[in-house]
Length: 274
Image 1 (cartoon, rainbow, N blue to C red):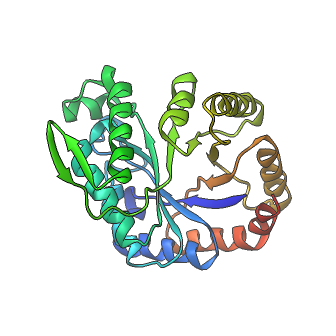
Image 2 (cartoon, rainbow, N blue to C red):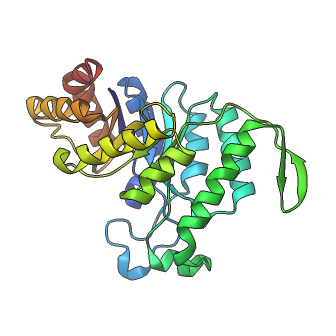
Image 3 (cartoon, helix red, strand yellow):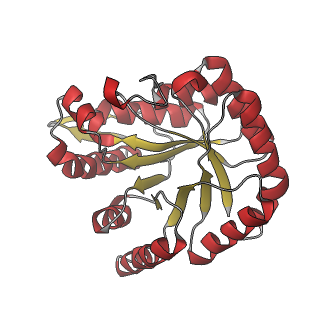
């Protein structure tokens, strides 16, 4: 099993120095991936914890790509209905090219009504927009010549397609994984609820002639209780989770570094056994 960690791009932890120090600490500790969130327009009455301050995830990952050399750089998750397909595909290809293939593309349909309203996007159409955008992304990474709006154009550079992970839950999310993606990116911590969904995902993949998708779970770990963390990892591995993306809170880069050092010492070796 792989072990990643979430990186805060919001609030006071989102300064340039802090995100760089945290990214480098995670890489030095041997963690597999960094995962960053996505919000564009936080309303004042929903800004607790962030103050409404959010860095753009793709720009941030591009910056961190230049400050690291090995660790995966993931969106966890990028809300596709918020962005136009072609310019976004160009940004993703550029980031994948300049990071030497380290992009991991977690995507979602979005949920916050205020953001859809600020963007002028019909929230009721978010599923269809997401499917169409994903299909377009896949096409862009498959061939040099692509068509959009009746115009053929060259999609270059065209690095290897980054792995795509679909967030969300329920039948629509699982079907979207099988149609367009390499894996599922759920949130939560209850193995009893997650196990049947993973089993269903594997059934859908088998029916489509595809291998078992990856499952990257965003969840918490009891970092101060190594035995409990190791047991939790073993439980999730048994039901088909292939990576834990550790959701964590921290005051500053020093606190983040202490957390990843504990993960590297007490938890990462156990994850590698699964």
